[in-house]
Image (cartoon, rainbow, N blue to C red; front, side):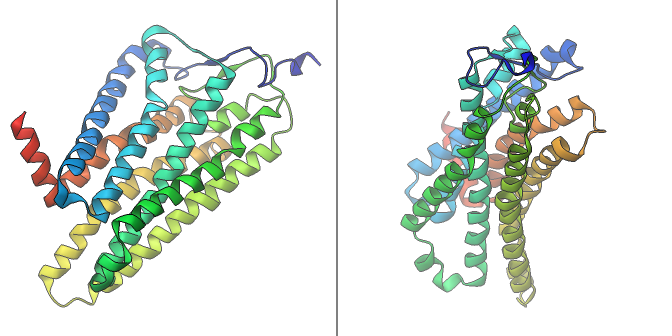
Length: 312
């Protein structure tokens, strides 16, 4: 029974091991981590600031960009500060409540992020396939309501995760081979039956993110079909240009997410440090690049950002 003497409700902290096999390089790894995080904060706060200041940007598309910026900031902030504490100071301990809190915030932001990408795909579909009704279908008030629905859906999906973890007995070895409290990494520390935990984790990955991705693909399939029917090449380019940024963001976001989600279950042959580095890239790279991509591809936003940066 000694193997079952530590449970999530005990006061014994967990130990975050950082990146296994690369402990000697933690200081060097922290350089891109901190750089990406600073760029992420500066770029996303710039988007929020510019959109809030410019009345002409108070439109559904830019409200969605603000929601995306908030989830970008929240998702990376849930992970990066603690990871940097591990890399710089060796502060590897995290309390059980702290671990579960980090997990909840990370997955709520990540799930909301996915839902907002779906909403943005719907926004582009209406803008291109039914432009005459765009202003009546997608009002600012409706976009805000959709954002709240995305958040509520995320909370409802994620709340069972810490509840399921609290019922598990944990082994005396409390070391999590990760830089943050990733759900399956914590589940793997248990000495009990984790069937329900694994099933639910895989279920929400498929039912939530997988369904979002299918609906996004359907929306862009309909957009491409509508664009191909346009005879004007100039209109062709304009319509496709509005979607390019979104498609880049989708590929950049979903590829590392599904890789890290499936590696925990089916990728036993993949080196741990490769898996953990990619898991960290998911919360570092898309949040950093999203505002840059949209800033470059969206002329109106680019011009307004340029206006404020030139004043500095």
